[in-house]
Length: 266
Image (cartoon, rainbow, N blue to C red):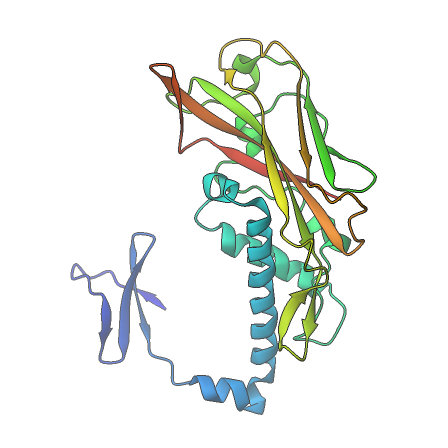
C-alpha cells in the first residue's frame, strides 16, 4: 500500500491499481493475485485460514460486547471501537486452550486484558471525571452492580466540554460469555447463549456543573438473573459521564466530551 501524493485524486480501479481515501489521506494498492478459492483450499494457506477463523471469532465476541452495552456504545464509543475490541479479544484468544485456529475466548480468565478499556480512546474517562470514588461492586450472584460516588465539587473534578451546563454519571453492566469453536457449525459460539450480551444502564440525576453535587450518588444496575451468573460468563461493569447543555429549561445531550471506561470484570 502506498500513498498517492499527486494533486490528481482518484477513486476506484484503473489498470490493476485501486485508489481510495482513508482518514483524509489518499492511498493506492495493487490488485491481489491470490483468490478466495486458493486461500480456502491450498495447504500453503493453512495458517492463513487458522488466523482468519480466530480473527472472525474476535470480531464476533467484540460485537457481543457492544450489544451488551446497547445504545450507550454509540454515544460513548469512538469510530474505531469495533476494531479495538476485536484486537482486545484476539489478545484473549492467544491465551486460549485448543488447536490453533480453534482456540477458546476465555473472557472470565482474562479479565486483566479488558479492565481499563476506554470506549473512546481520545476521550478517556480519567481526563473528564476524576473525583475520588471506589470501583463498582457486584453482589454474590454477580448480577447486580452498585457504584457509589461521594459528594464532590464539579468545578474541581470534572473537565467539561464547551457549552456543557449539566452532566450525568453512568453505570453500565453487561454479560459476556466465554466462546468456543463449534466444529459442527464451523464458527465460534457462546458457551452460555441465554446470558450472553444481556445488559442494562443506570443514570444519575442531572448534576449542575457548578460547585458541590450536594449528595452522595449511588447507581445500581440489576440484570434480573435472580440466580448466580454461570462461571463461564463475565459481568463487565463500566462507568462514565454524559454532558448536557440547558437551553430554555430543556437539557440537550452533547456529542463531545462523553466518556466511559470498563473498570470491573467479575
